[in-house]
Image (cartoon, rainbow, N blue to C red):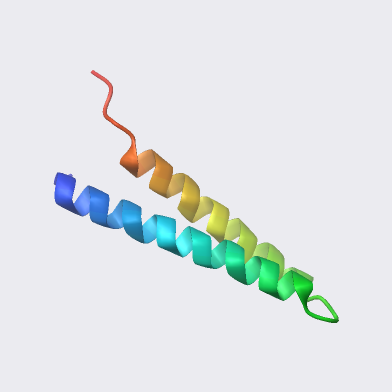
Length: 61
């Protein structure tokens, strides 16, 4: 993959992960808590954060 696109997608994944975790906290803190939405957003946020970390790692030779 071209390094430009790899970094672009990694930044997108980081931003999406942070937004997903923020939405999870927001949905868990309302009264009554929307736990299903909180778990979905939290899970997707973690997946995007892990994808961003994997994409931004240096290649091992």
